[in-house]
Image (cartoon, rainbow, N blue to C red; front, side, top):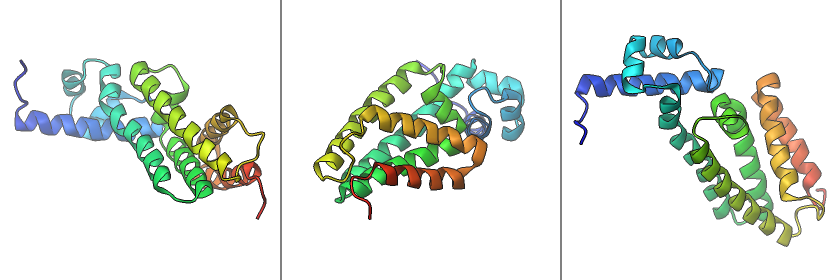
Length: 185
C-alpha cells in the first residue's frame, strides 16, 4: 500500500511530467533529463525520486499521447462522409506525429513502453482498416491502395515534419491523399 504524495511532492511530480512532455515532444524520447529538471524547476534527484528510470517517465507520459490517437479515430468514425473521415484521420495523425517527436519515436523506433505502443498500434490498425474499408465501399479510394500503403505513407509524412516543418507536412499530406482518391475533383 502506497501513501499519497504530499502536496509539494505531488506538485513537483506534475511539474516534472509537464516539463518532460515538452522536452520529449521537442527532442524525442532521448531528451535530456537534466533539461526536464531545469524546466520543472527541480533538482535532477527529484526527477529520479518520482521516476527512477527514463522508461518509467516515458511510461507515465505515453498513455495520454496514445489516447489522442484513439480520439482521432473516434472523430473519424463519427464523420458521415467516408472520404472526409479518412483524410481527417490521416491529416490529424500525421500532424500530431510530426509535431511530437516523442510520439513518432515511440511508434517507429525502439521504445521502452513496447507493450503500450504495440496495443495502440493494434487498435490503430484495426481502426484504420475499418476506415479504409468504409472509404473503399464508398468508392472514394483507389482500388489498388492497400492498408500497408497508407501506413507507410503516414509514417513517411510524419518523418517529414522534423526536416521541413508542420506546414510542409500538411501540404504534402494533402497532395498524397489527393493521389489516393478514386475520382479527382
